[in-house]
Image (cartoon, rainbow over all chains, first blue to last red; front, side):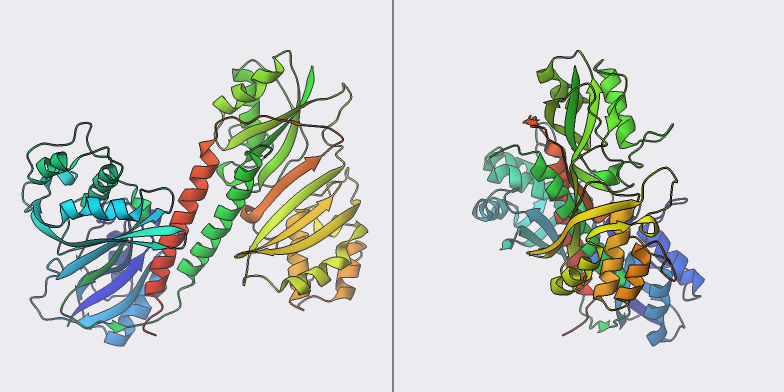
Length: 263
Length: 263
């Protein structure tokens, strides 16, 4: 049988996504777990996220005779920082690279990014079909660089601003480079004409584009015409990590307060 | 001239406090900076905090001919994760170990510790003078283990509970071991009679005491009969670290949400 499996991970705990000899990567760890549990020898991935980027819903496809109900508990018992939570049977010709849509979310700290109104205005320049060659890490030569952005929205929530970006596919480092330019436009450091030239592949930005840090980016979902069956197994890793990070942030903010000097 | 210097640090970025050959410690880094700037060759520390513990106001004493106003800017330009922010002239016989009071704060996440009322009740057992020998990492033999706790208070603030503990001095790992027992009493896992025996040095806890994790503890201040002059210099390190930790916590909580399954 062929299955699509949906899974989450903390990207900061691995040396990138794609398998690499002698490196602890997300794909490499999953292959190790698949072999350890005699489920499969190989897999195909939907999205090779950039090093440091996390996911709530990336997808792999495997071929296996393992009982459907046993696959996710077996994998999760072998992995830390990676957690499977959905499964769907797929046809023999199903290719996880061909998704209907990919959804990324970038987490800004409120007050550390331009106002949502300005970000929204700047992002309109990027909607629809463009050549994103100059907005990816490098032109690999064999990937089509013309593609369409379905939507970019900015939402304020408590102390954060979410940037949600949806498209059928993205190029290497494209989300973080595009958001970097959107911030620059919203801050009036880059103008619309320059962005137009960038989006036709005509001329790159002077000084290049510094992609936003990967730690704040999450691949939220990869969407197919499939119904994933949700499988919930024990998963204290992520809850514990959130708890520990919130505590650490509070501790360091107490330290930072001491440096402000008298009022 | 002899000066007391007040400083803050992120304890998680160093391999402990006390100088150690070949290790990056807080004291070691400060000595390196003092030498690099030709300010002094040595120092005396007020508190050797446990590995992983941070500080808002630890204190060192140095002898130097360096101009008072230049000392803190010179040191801060050499250090990362350690930041000086106060200075006071002290008499020749001033010993930083002899403080009037030391103040530690432990940061609990609300909902991940017993109710404040129960913690407050349990902590009353520890107030005043006791033999804390069985509440420290080990009896070094040359340190007096009888000492007095001045106060222990618990305060709820937003998503955290602060435990503030004040005493003239503390033993090795004592704050984290004492709080561990207070939590155990508040959870009714340890009774008052057992604590009494512990505090006379009569009998240790069965199974030992697991100190609470150091990352959530901050040495808030070391108090002397001195007026420290506040010196504010640029310090983006701690603000950047808070920002990065809060963003990371939000990212991982988005990942954790995906694992909850359908409502």
